Image 1 (cartoon, rainbow, N blue to C red):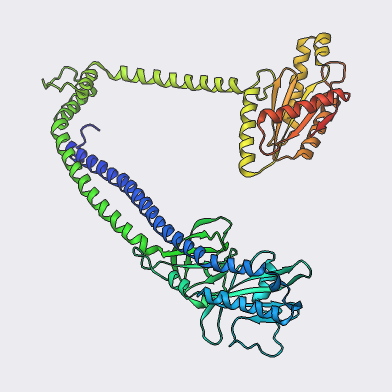
Image 2 (cartoon, rainbow, N blue to C red):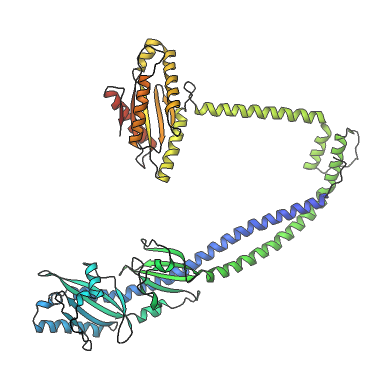
Amino acid sequence: MMNKAAKTTIRQEIFGSSMIFSAIILVVFSLFLSSVLYRSRMSKAYGIIKQKNYAVSLFMDGYFSEIDDTVDFLAANEEVQNLPWLYPPARQRVLNLYKSFAKINKKITFIYSGYENHEFLINSEDYKTPKGFNPTVRPWYQSAMAAKPKRSPGIPYQDIKTKEWLFSTSEALFSREHGYTGVISIDCSIEMVTDLLKQRSDVYKSSYSFVTKSDGEIILHHNESLLKKNIAEIIGTPLNLDKDEGRLVFKMDNVKKIAFYSRCNETDWLVFTVVDKNEIIKPIAWRIFFGIMLTGIIAVLLGVGQSFILSRRFSTPLLELRKKVKNIISGNLESDSGYKYPENEIGIIAEEVGRLTAHELYTKSMELAKANRLLEQKNDELKKISTTDQLTGLFNRRKIDSELEKERQRSIRYEKKFSIIMFDIDWFKKINDTYGHQAGDSVLKDIALLLKNNLRAVDIPGRWGGEEFLILCPQADIEEARELGSRICKLIAEHQFTIDRQVTISVGVAEFSGQEKCDDLIKRADENLYTAKHQGKNTVVAS
């Protein structure tokens, strides 16, 4: 085999290795660069979206807080509350009050109130109600009654005459004498709000905002066709909007959007600010591409330089070393080219190779293999000794503690039930005193064998200490564990042991509560065991 010509030279091997190393550097650094750039740019993008969203939310709170305060003030007015029972002068005072507020606040278009007796009062003299007009069936009235005693979350609608979009804020009227008598409502123009919502960000031209109720129903949007629709229906995905703010990624009109929403303090509405994801991703992709290109050029230059240096420094010593190894294998130990090896690892290897023979190499390899096998055998024995009770062959207390903690973590993570069974042998000291410790050991071994042959495959039995045993029962509730404990109690009581007397056990069962520590669970099982002892032994107590 040594006479076979090499397919590649050492220089080629070094060059190839250098290029592979450069490629690895390129891949690792590219992944790192891509991750850092993507995270930083996405974080910055969310910061911009969030900033705009907060600005819109603050504007919304400021814009509607005046309307909300006016509605609250009018709803607290006793004459407004009791208008159906008032005389004409008082009714005129209420109407003048409406007109005064509408005159002071230019945002207000209409102030009106409807009552259970179908009466209707509005500040506009131009507004004529049709014959038989019933305010109680109108959406603004029903929305306020449904929300009482709070304000209605608001209803957008388009005025029939002016085609202007208005927003109705309503509140149920409550009178101490007559109970709920009607609803006070204020309609305000939302043109300024919709103009703000559709404004584009200086950074992202595809950005805009819209407003929904807390359940996701759109109430303010520059696209009027989307009003009163639920955002979950539009994007085709159910949303959890319980938090006060959050991030979303969804598709709308086959365009992937990144959104941030926050909750208005005054109205409990949700303000969404969205941006096309492509507008954010494209600049990031270009930055990553140029970063990878630059990294690739640097990596290639480093690889070429490394290949050149290594070839000059190591190719000749390695070729000389190859000749020396070939001579040793062929038995030509006396042949020496007189080459002086460098004072590094190659020189040391060349010196060591000169001292070895084929027999020595073979002997050492065999001895090493034998030592490895012996070490593995000893490790296996040590592992078994560290986890197994030597008398019964069951898990020892240390191993059971470990398995119990694992099951506790699994139960918390996946919300799976589990229980433990703890029992000890009744009158075990008397057995040892009467029949001797060997007979006692025999009883322990028989019980261990009964457990191995009669438990479920998933159950984990172990010797807790002395005559006390513990069984871990995964995915078993208290009733299932109680039944298993009763079955074990019966099996042991009916088993014919080597001594001429019946052997019984007392059993305590406890189910994991969901959050307690293992020590607390074991303590509960131990307390139940001692309760079983006090109840006469040979019985099961569970809690």
